[in-house]
Amino acid sequence: MTKKFYITTPIYYVNSVPHIGHAYTTIAQDVLARYKRQKGFDVRFLTGTDEHGANIEKSATAAGVTPKQWADEVSDKYKALWKTLNISYDDFIRTTDKKHEQVVQAIFEKLLKSGDIYLGSYSGKYCLSCEQYYNESEILEGNLCPVHKRPLTEVHEETYFFKLSRYEKPLLKYYEEHPEFLSPKTRAHEIINFVKGGLQDLSVTRTKVAWGIPVPSNPHHTIYVWFDALINYISAAGYGTVLCEDKTLHEAQLKQIRADKFEDLWPADLHMVGKEIFRFHTVIWPAVLMALGLPLPKKVFAHGWWTVEGEKMSKSLGNIIDPAKVAAQYGVDPLRAFLFREVPFGQDGDFSMESFKNRYNSDLANNIGNLLSRTLNMAAKNIGELPEKIEGDYPLLAKSAEVEKAIDAAYDQLAFDKVLENIYGFASDLNKLVDTKKPWELAKTDPEAAKAVLLELVACLRKVAVWLEPFMPTVAKEMQKRLLPGKIEKYPPLFPRLEADKK
Image 1 (tube, rainbow, N blue to C red):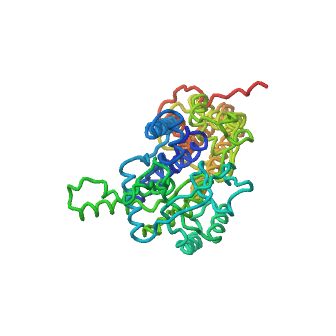
Image 2 (image 1 turned 120 degrees about the vertical axis):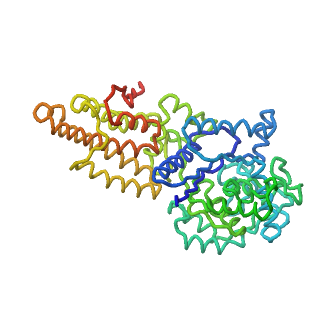
Image 3 (image 1 turned 60 degrees about the horizontal axis):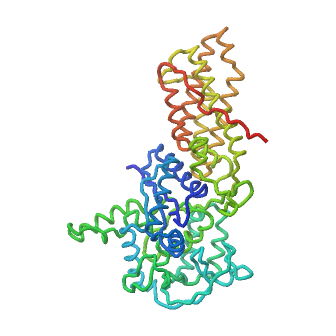
């Protein structure tokens, strides 16, 4: 049987347009999805948008539209960007989808009946930007939000609570028994210490936010945006969809069909998130799943943030990088590759156009593009037509098997930078072979030896083209086309060099 592989991005909050940070997470999962498909996995790749809450109401009001109109417009911008960036997602969920809303309501009522959710009242410090309450130990001096560094608001309201405190020990036990769940390891300590510090029950409804999913048994309350949003990972996978179907089938039969589909897909193999929402995904979300009696995701991986030339991205500084604009000017594939070459995945990174152009010229134009052009030009003169299979005692072709093992190991660790390091390093070895053997000179004295060098280069470049495909799907396909068996055509440079900016 083909092994399933279910991966997700966060669902992106539609309070503003997408930027390079959103693209980073999504391209990372796309790279992984494409690699796993190459390896024969049945991949299900989920992304989407998170569309409820006070911030959406606020943005919509400022724009003079309804919250749904605002959400529709921004959600479409995400879809358009993912199309531009060649994202091969299988499913795009919106939290305003009726199916999702019904599943959230059903889960809420189920946990209410089990006692995991109960009605109470709350007084506390609330961040309007985070849409989250903070306890005293987390609040910065001056009554400031620890994330946004803005003053917190004192809020008093009736609310339903989720019994998060009930899951303190089960969570710690799970972390201990499944160390891969909290990834990378450098971020695990923070979560474990947070849970060891004691969990408080979580407010999961609002009475002062109209734009949200109503509690079926008490419509005066809307469900907290974060409780609603996290459920997308199972609502998209088919959990509870029996509630949303036309009951033309016998109830038991329909329920069995839906249960089988969900169980085929769940648990997720990987949730990929930014580090600022790691806690939601590794504390609240697994506790909700435990309350529902469902398996937990196998891994939650939190990557770092991007700055721009040393500065945090912000509207006020005017330094938000629009990935669509960079892609339009320099190509989608070079941007995709750059994001994972520049910084070890999981750490914070800095984006600058100077770094982008340097990497483009060194890794792509000089190392791979020039190598491909030189090889094909020499092959056209000395071989004529490329054979389908190339076999023989070729040292670098033999080494490619070791390189592939290293690439597989790096993917297992989500070390995308190491994957590229291995690919580019192997391309450098091929360039050294050209410079050492000098097949253009060798052809004058020993045509067969020159032909052997060129065949080895072609065979190895075919490997490189396959390895590059998850990062650069369009360019890799073009490489593969140029290396197909048959007559060698004349082609323009794969990566035209970029000129440095004039000082």
